[in-house]
Amino acid sequence: MASNIANSDLKINGRIYRLPTQPTVVVCVDGCEPDYLAQAVATGQMPWLKRTLALGSGLTADCVVPSFTNPNNLSIVTGAPPSVHGICGNYLFDTATGTEVMMNDPKWLRAPTLLAALADAGKSVAVVTAKDKLRALLGHQMKGICFSAEKADQANLKDNGIENVLELTGRPLPSVYSADLSEFVFAAGVKIMQQSKPDVMYLSTTDYVQHKHAPGTDGANAFYRMMDGYLDQLEALGCVIVLTADHGMNAKVAMDGTPDVIYLQDWFDDWLGPSVARVILPITDPYVVHHGALGSFATVYLPEGSDVDAACKRLSKRKGMEVVLTRAQAAERFELPADRIGDLVAVSERFTVMGTSAVRHDLSALEVPLRSHGGISEQRVPLIVNRKLPGLDLSRRFRNFDAFDLALNYAQ
Image (cartoon, rainbow, N blue to C red; front, top):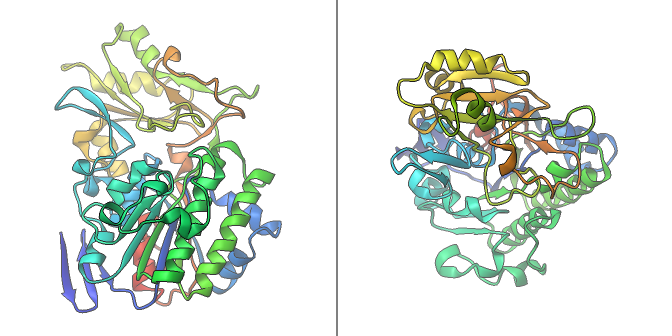
């Protein structure tokens, strides 16, 4: 799928990109609802961003649904939706083996990444991600630097293209449940840019802060103030910077502040009998402390011969549902691989999440009212470039996976 068109062009996954002539950094800020930026800029927390919005380009875009980390990060680095690259969640039901598995193995990837293609074209590439679950996918077949902040102490030249990362940053290994994990990503990115000046860098953070702190709160503003300082340093190094997000974030609570949850497996068990249907929550990953594996997107497998349309209509009437679609409908609307989703896809409303069975979700670690994502209501994300973009059609629908198109084809 990747081929050179000319000395300065690269074709990958149906799109043509120019090779970079300036150091280029694409940043995916996990869980960055646009209001986080608006509140931080309005209160003077982000002088770099305020200047960038005035002198560069400030757009909003749609992420892919399900609005989760893995499918969107892979969309950004492939420039394509999940129907092309195959990563349709953090977690899926593998029908071939009858098991539920994490989608963090490159074997699930169906398309090459632009990062690998740029490296093959002779450009130096560096990737720093917060959580290790993304590292293997982002770095698949890529020559260059690729490591996670979570396991920065284990980075080595053979596997990651870099060593002594803790010494490089002058920072200790961060906790996976902390704002420090994302700050480590930015600190490492700045140091690598200062020392190695890679042609292309991809930085991906974690949404620990966004799960705990609403826009405009002290915790959120402190995070965006920190981020702004590192972006200012990258711009001072001459970088083209594109800032986007993998998804937004919303409160998912009832009026009394408790999580507003539809336990979908319990719902199907009450209707069809125990374990007749299988509910899969693609938000599931090893880091459940801040969201309890509760999100606004679920997929459901029904027994062979089931009346799928009738089940779709019945579930659609459940209070809290925004839309329920059949496999074909969901694959078309959300650009998903039809063979990796269930017979039904359910999306809950803005303030509602879905679980499997109540007994399977431990919410005791939630220290603040639940904030989560996954649905259509978390689809709007920022798409910001620290350059004017001459010739760009501003009337088109922008996606977060247009980030490299803007960075390489318009901002250079």
